[in-house]
Amino acid sequence: MQDYRKLRVWHLARDLTLNVIEGLPDRVARKVPGLRAQAIRAATSVGANLAEGCSRATRPELLHFAEIALGSLNELDAHLLLARDAGVLAECEYTRLQGHIVHVRRMLLSLLRTIQRRIAEDASARSKAEASP
Image 1 (cartoon, rainbow, N blue to C red):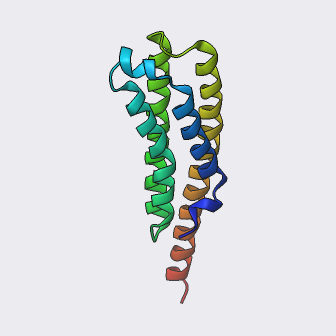
Image 2 (cartoon, rainbow, N blue to C red):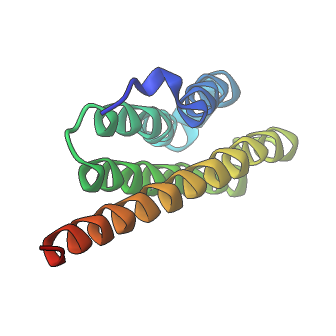
Image 3 (cartoon, rainbow, N blue to C red):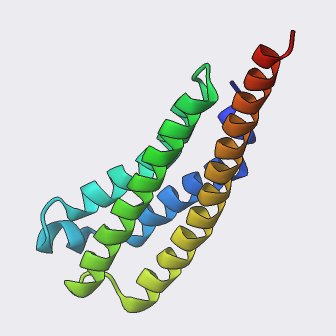
């Protein structure tokens, strides 16, 4: 459908992933095994699902992958909260990463609404075309 690199939200998701990689210290992996890797996978999944959705042929498919990206973003949010509560992520770093998550979430929700609106417009146009002689 479109080049994912043209989506501003994809760039923000990529930046978020890099910030998670840099911001989660190795001690996270030592104290809570698997948490650092899982957080990085969730962060990576946000941008990857946007990229995959953009390669699909229809808007409903793009919507599906954008919804998965939102789920991955929420998963990342939960992992970072756990890291903070376990004492392996400093409050200031958690707050910084949380700010990135909020920004990506807002843009992702806006993208979801736009896709949903366009799907509805497509359906309305098809309906009108089928009704006209």
